[in-house]
Image (cartoon, rainbow, N blue to C red; front, side):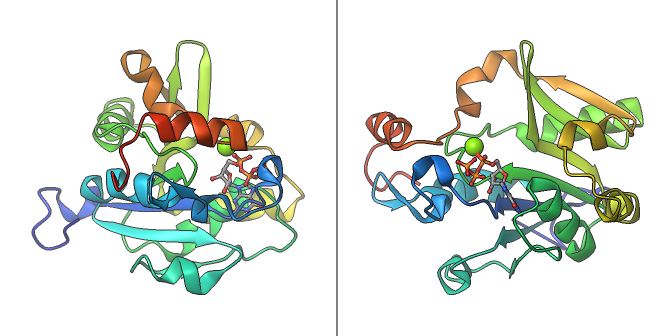
Length: 208
Ligand SMILES: Nc1nc2c(ncn2[C@@H]2O[C@H](COP(=O)(O)OP(=O)(O)OP(=O)(O)O)[C@@H](O)[C@H]2O)c(=O)[nH]1
Ligand SMILES: [Mg+2]
């Protein structure tokens, strides 16, 4: 992670936000990113992959804030309460990001692509879009997105009007979808204890 040494010009710099504000209900109501996977908290795997790709890293979490702070990055909760979904975390991130572009990744995707950010950014700029989102084949991955920080007001108005559905908000924007068909396995998402056990088989202990 770099700032003054970033190869990106200042107006193209990117804040990465790890989305970890969910309730982990399919895992029994745990703070999913803090659950151990191959000797590390699950979030450590995602953070290790995301950090080299961004110019600033921040964490959105709504519980166990001290444990999240131990990762050494700024931690903040949703501004609207009641676990309103990932858009609430994205909005809080847009408000706090130091850089003009913000990329999101969920805490439960420990294999995320090493070229996620570069490919989203290339597509965003080429299409002059407001938001770039990953997909593999016909499967969208809406919590892997890169968008412009100046969407904060637009998203704030959507949330204030009761909007919660990520697809609906994306539908109101100029969006470019970015195909990662060649990296489908990198989007593997760990939602249950069984999926956690399977993922552990594919990661050596202490791998993050
Ligand atoms: N900030 C914030 N993020 C959320 C919220 N709900 C889900 N997320 C995030 O959205 C991403 C995808 O969510 P899920 O995989 O469904 O995670 P989850 O909500 O913790 O898990 P389940 O309760 O089992 O659905 C994860 O990065 C979550 O942390 C929320 O209310 N606020
Ligand atoms: Mg998930």
